[in-house]
Image 1 (cartoon, helix red, strand yellow):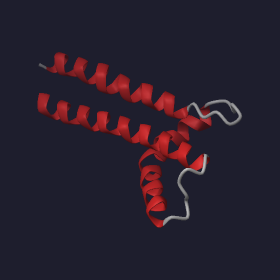
Image 2 (cartoon, helix red, strand yellow):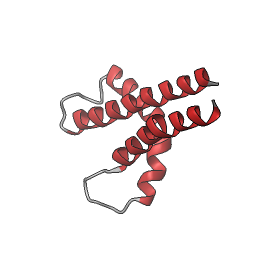
Image 3 (spheres, helix red, strand yellow):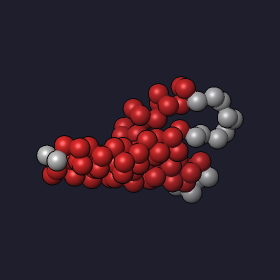
Image 4 (cartoon, one colour):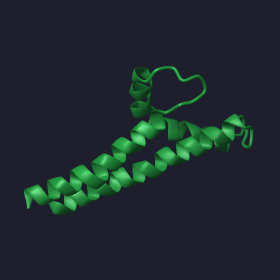
Length: 96
């Protein structure tokens, strides 16, 4: 059971980096550092969006409109950290 929880924790830590990459990638697109018409950039952006949007979308619906400031990745990162670093170790201690 401990190995399974360790694997799930690894998935959450990897997803943390995917969310960070999505934030950085969106900044690079917004400031025209990279061009969306490039096929490689477009495919990477679509892959990152496919991984992050299912969780960021519902968070955005509940947050108030802050103008150009998107706080949903911060909320998602706090949730991922909370699950990976607090909930899973708690479950590992409880189940063993």
